[in-house]
Length: 100
Image (cartoon, rainbow, N blue to C red):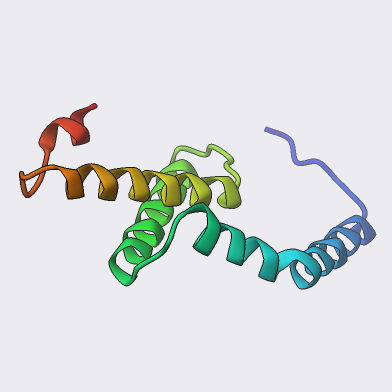
């Protein structure tokens, strides 16, 4: 696979745009995902971060590009669905959910 040559100024411009986006919209995004999308508790936040980290590591291992933001939002939604399911169940761990 050949490497693509690109000017350094494109990396600098992309970095500046990324930082501007984080500075201007980062707080709003964190509030939206952490509070409005799904209420985060300490155990659910840990599960969310662990799930996102594992997903990104596996995708990196198989050389697949993924959006970390999308992975994290998917992990938040998945942890919320699992929590809601397990709270309504009288079984400690519902293994059918893990297999599905």
